Length: 67
Image (cartoon, rainbow, N blue to C red; front, side, top):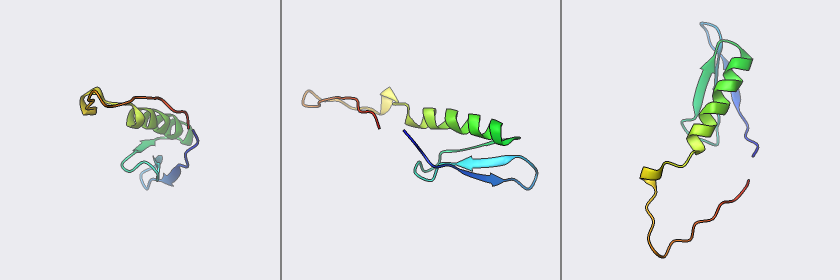
């Protein structure tokens, strides 16, 4: 999966980084490398399925796709 991310230099130093296609998925870091590593982790957590949020019935079909 490829996602576009936006780096914004912070006034106090470092970077804020966010993913426009994933509302609320934002992170930061003191360096570009740290910010990139942090946003990768934020994306993984954002996309991770939360079992408590999933409601299944007997009529549901569950499949996995790769994008």
